[in-house]
Length: 501
Image (cartoon, rainbow, N blue to C red; front, side, top):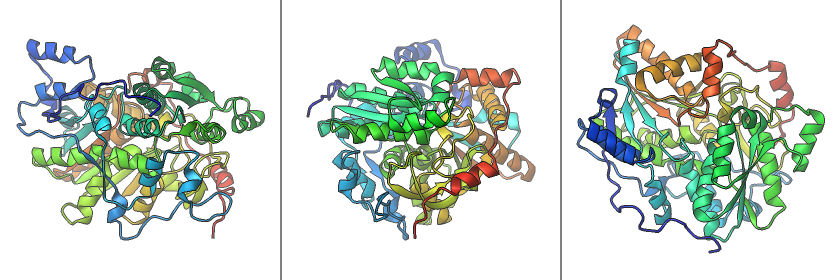
């Protein structure tokens, strides 16, 4: 292997058990506990959670396998198609973009995939992540509902994204890849891949959506600190970027454009592979560590979720939490409502069409059957940069079409209102992306207040907002506005979706 793992293989304890259950009433720690927490340098949430979990004697371990929901679906999802022939894509068609192991995972029908030991060792930096009961939020809302959130913000990058960045970097390094390229919106994915690449000795280059590049400089600085090169997208470094700039020199960019730029660079350099932070099957697969942990944590609380809520852009965080629960739902063990929440300004599930479309703006990627607003749709620059994607993960789109989940959209002012309530009760400042899940959770909790139902609500809390404070500043100063979409703009974009018979 050309690059080596910089962490020694036995750097962490073999025992991954940790008490990771605590409630909003358990935040008051004694001095000794505070000293132990400070010693963790902010990353080892397992240690923090153990200090706070006096009411819960059970413990949870990091899963040693990822879960593939395709194995349990009676109707399999439509295959991706070659962009020129419209025939189902073959493994060799993807070899210039991805390492062989990830290509296998993309198409596998196996139910469970073993997580490599090297990946598990790095997961132990922050996993298992805590499941927290939001008692103070419940009290504020005066709801009989019981609200739980699975918090992924304790990873080094501050979000759920390292769950897939680490294995993607590992498989690339294992096959001797020298360089990886990617896109990022708000920067959570780019910083996660930069972090993972630094551990495996890979060079990393990131195209960040221009609007977020300028709005969120600290995300860019995180990536650069971990050794990545970062470019605003669209850029003049690629043909795809130059075409966009020629037509719109002030383009705010989009994830679709940034994907085109990164894919173009990977395709023309033999020693370079492309990494994607959402949408693809293998990415969603890696994120299921979230739901697998959460199932056991809910059992240890003695609870069964009635409603599961998560935000969706590309869909990896939502899939990571919900797919293992959908498995249990298919078995007839539970029957929760599973609700995806997207921004009103980029409503691919609720307003898009279910059709084959490109995953990028320039049309370089395979065609995927997904809910799409059209591959050249450029959403308004909402502050939830990670949700500004024209399409939804094909696997989530398929699950949605099969009726296993529902979807709603919420404007950003309501989301930030919910975020403030959450921060002032639970203490965590959310990233703009999960504020959509918070707003939907508050809606559900207030309905329970009206009906008297004591529902159990489980929410995906995918990351913190420490680098998104300018968004909060804008909201607190009353300058945030609700951005929406233009029907005319969407119809124009949808008219360019390929017609696949």
